[in-house]
Image (cartoon, rainbow, N blue to C red):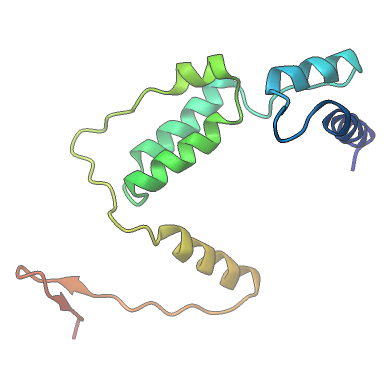
Length: 139
């Protein structure tokens, strides 16, 4: 870990222990202000334009459900300040885009990445829905 990062973690630990608890949490602007006072760089990991691209990608993705989309965007907005979050909180409307109704996408992606990491093979079974709504396996 780089010296600056260790130093930042030490200062954050010190301030959390001395100046906050469950009833009195430190806000992000207070944390940044304290780090600047210690002479530690406190730049955010993403520029506003980069964050907007990430949010737009999540909103326009058809394989991520509406619920998962809102959860992901909330987590992304947590990485920016309140003022920037308000600027980014507009919905990107994609005409005709059908969002996935399944909440299992995260699980499937996780399984695929773990298998890849462990160098395991994956097997997929494909099927189609017929006009009556029944699942049909290809012959």
